[in-house]
Amino acid sequence: MKAVGYHRNLPIDAPGALEDLDLPAPEAGPRDLLVRVKAVSVNPVDTKVRAYTPPPAGEAKVLGWDAVGIVEVVGPEATGFAVGDRVWYAGSIRRPGANSELHAVDARIVSKAPTTLDDAQ
Image 1 (cartoon, rainbow, N blue to C red):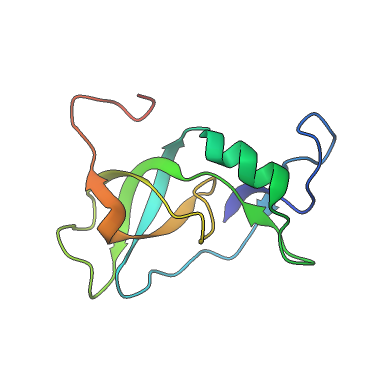
Image 2 (cartoon, rainbow, N blue to C red):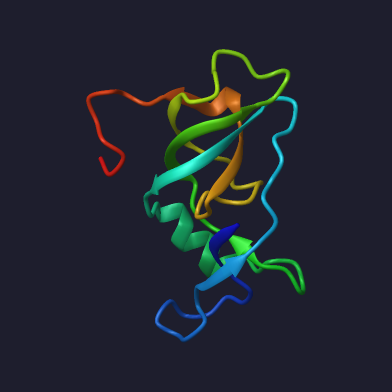
């Protein structure tokens, strides 16, 4: 899957500060939703994590925790959601971010997105 992340903490205006990545698609854990991401926002947390949290050696870190998308998989212990639900959430900084085509997120921190707002809002 396509994602945006970084391998090294560089100034944001430096070449390579953010990179297009090809990564394996995540799998939904027991309490997770696998979401096809439609839109993300840049949160102040994104800028701080990128500036001060290096990824493990040889790995990339994917940013982005505020997202909206469509549920593709519901983990066996996740409740309140169905495949096809439009959801929004602020994910956990302890997991890969949502700046990717697919994102696995704990269903306990997800809500159904309001129908009165489009993805960009």
